[in-house]
Amino acid sequence: MSVVGKYAEFAVSCRTKDHSKDVFHHAKRALIDWFACTLPGGLEEPAVLMTRALDEDIGRGKSTLLPRGEPATTRTAALINGTASHIIEFDDIYRDGLFHPGAPIISAALAVAEMTNSSGVDLLRAVIAGYEVANSIAEAVNPHHYEWWHTTATVGFFGASASAAVLMGLDSEKTSHALATAGTMAAGLQQAFRADAMSKPIHSGRAAEGGVLSALLAQNGVTGAFDILEGERGFGNAMSANVDWTESVDMLENNRSITRITQKNHAACGHVHAIIDALNHIRNTNEINSTKIKKIKIGSYQKTYEICHNPNPKTPYEAKFSAEYCAAMAIIKGRALRSDDFLKENLQAPLVRNLMDIVDLKVDEGCQNAFPKVRSAKIELVTLDDEVFAHFAPTRKGDPDNPLSDSELSSKYTDLVEPVAGKPAGQALLSALWSAENVKSVKDLDLENLSR
Image 1 (tube, rainbow, N blue to C red):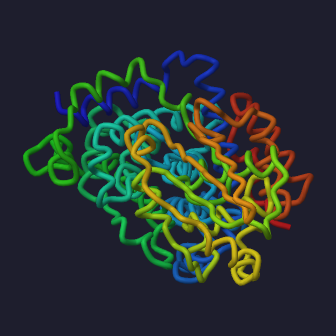
Image 2: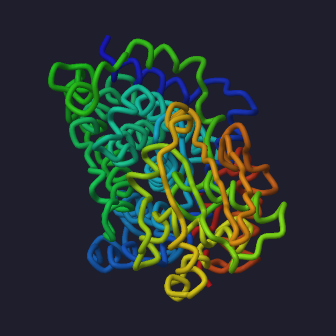
């Protein structure tokens, strides 16, 4: 049997599998985190611009654009919501796979769940299937894949396709065709987020849309190349190296990666989170005067330096990918960084600029050797009086070994959703999501009324 065939069998089994309460609970956490990111993201560019560009697909269809509440075709809802969910850089991470699963997978799953009038438990099962399939592939092809490709864009196609196929009721053969078609469409280059461009969040939107499209095509008889993953010129050989597909598939039954998802604690690129955490610790356990610091020495892993070494960010988007800016704001704020900490007016504040100028970011051998299984940072802060404060963050707040509690996740949701939807609608949705297994139809989530 082909590799996509084995993934397809697993995905189909998720429709009836006796998942543990813990697995279902983590699927609900994933949904809550997705809504927390998508509602504010839907008010930002490029999501707003996309609604203008795709106007002919809006105002009709069975799915919903968030937070606007307008109906849209299923593919367009997946595309725009999938983009919105990745815009504010607050969406979840599968650390071992260098992957943001929620943005492509849940965006596709929710759009299809609305189209099929599925229940809350059906949606949860589809999310579990999408996460497990995609996380397995992401872990198999990385870290080599991440040198050039944006895993969320590429592997996201497979997860979105699996979740859509589950909700459409496709059998194993048609799900195999859906995954195979998704595999040949999968794309997304890292260059897109090495610049101040809107392309990065569109990656997750296209993956969500592509997953829906591949499932719809398979449902109607379109076939795909079953050896798209392991074939000589397939995904693994073209976009990675020395992939062990046997091990990857074998992990499916026992891995349950959805229970090891990172929910972000800061509204910035995940590669700077350990830096923020370490500086928050130094700032909050010592008497630090932010105007009397001589040097902030930071050691982290190579990808932090490659992607987030930007001592002169010019836009809020660039600031989210600037270790220097995030370090400065951590010293100033001493708490989790939220979207308001990346407003344009902050970028030119004299204190922020002064602190950015004294940040020295380097690659630390120990941090690099632990990557990607561990995301760590070492900090040494030197004051004008030559007093030295040091701290090592061995992981990030929000990672599986230091997770956000349910209460902390709810607080994150409230912080992000209530300014958009208002307290009554926001809290009603949160309550429904925490008991999603009891939701008879996703239509009962009242998604058309989440914008004030």
